[in-house]
Each structure stands twice: as structure tokens, then as C-alpha cells.
Image (tube, rainbow, N blue to C red; front, side, top):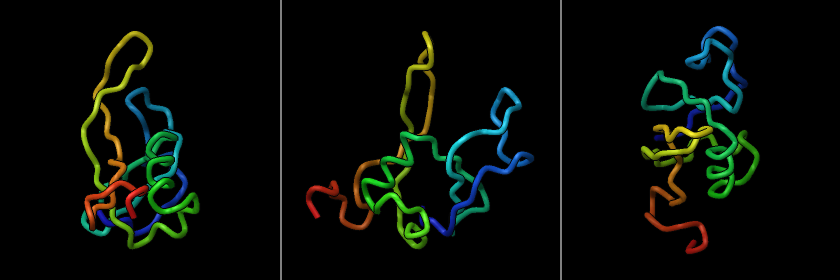
Amino acid sequence: MTIKSWEYPDAKKDKGGDGKTMEGTVLLFAETPKRFVANVTNYKSIANLYGADPDKWAGKKITMKPAKTKFGRQTMDCIRIANIDPETGRAPEAF
């Protein structure tokens, strides 16, 4: 996915399953109108690839992958950002 821009969560658009506004950085993509609220873990993965300033992420590509995470005692499905450069398929340490 190509990051088009980012914004803060919108109280009307970015609600979780509990009805509360989600927290994180909202990513907008060139390929789809869907919004993705990047939590702290996903934000750090993107920052590891492209730096911590989301203003510099526009035009950068990320690979999203399904994963599992623990939430309390439950294991839940989630989306994670792969720690690879989608252009080269290599981890940041290998650049």
C-alpha cells in the first residue's frame, strides 16, 4: 500500500468495535479510500522503515500482513506492518 497522507483520528469515522474513537495515526492510501488507524506498534514499524515523522511518509510503500496479538487473556486477529522495504523485500538493516 502506498501512503498518501496521514491525519489524526476523526471522532465520526474512526470508531472501534466498542464505539469509542480509536487512538493512533490514521493513514490514507493511494490505492483505496479505506482508512487505517495505525496503533503504536504499527507506527513504530513504519517509523523503523521511514523515520518517525509521518509528514515524510507520503509516497512510501508499506506491506500489511495479518497477525495475532494478545489482548488480556484473549488472542485476537490484527494487522501488522511488515518490517521490510516493499521495493526491495529486505529489512531496514540491510539497506
